[in-house]
Amino acid sequence: MLETQGLRYSSASNPDRPMPLHPHPGALEVILYGIEGEGTLAMGDEEKPFKKGDLVFCRGDVPVGPKNTGQGRLMVLVILVLKQLIAKGEFLVKETIPHPVATD
Image (cartoon, rainbow, N blue to C red; front, side, top):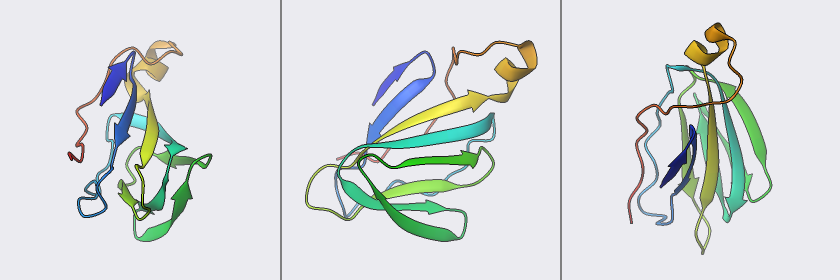
């Protein structure tokens, strides 16, 4: 997983090991962008198809979890809009929150 200035991308490349459903309580908003592959994205009680080029916005308190259902690698860019930075009037994400990652 790459982490830079609060931006991350993670790979859920193994279909047998999906990323666990999890919230981002320190984030006001979570933005997920499909970089590569296809799968599903669980958000709360719903699960919908998710693939390269898809863009999803959700509140930070909503549990999310991508799952690889394709043949190749699923890569998702996750951008967190942190509550504390919005409160300070800063617009660039400059720090990260611990985030579970599915490993190969």
